[in-house]
Length: 236
Image (cartoon, rainbow, N blue to C red; front, side, top):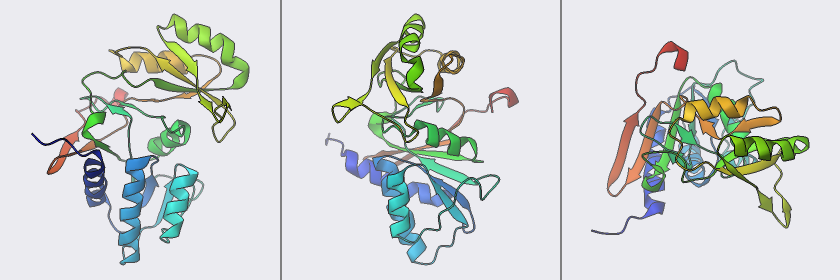
């Protein structure tokens, strides 16, 4: 058996996602290494004549790449609803619950995903897990709530660590902090998502529950297409 090639898997997934893009769409453009490959591929199609209405980037890096290809950029002030967002994930379970935020853009990624009719997630095969939680869950918080939230997250079963960068605390685009929280296996992601959202001082967390519609997984020689199970109206 040949060793898997993560770079090839990411490229295959990224290119497959463009099959969901139709002319005239309003798009959300995700963040991270796999999403960046998708933006490069989308940019090449735009330069070849594909016309889209506009695209909302979820990070400065994504915006920079998209602009370099002449992809028309916009914000959520310009459109009521996006047709499609394509983004990566740090982990994805069989029900397409996700952990995102390893790159620190979870707030913008979730805002854009929530504003989209459809979310397509692209990933290499290492990101697919039976149960979420091997990847530490990012939780974006305001600085004033750091100490009480460390205690409260501990009471929920997590072990939070303040994310560091450049010799100091990592700061998001809004100047917030991120706690990377080890909960072990997350058997009930929906319940944990609700519990974290209820904590005062939590800006956003990296659990994307019931948001992804399709997961494209690059594997040796092809792409697996995994669709989310049918959800009740209360879950959508």
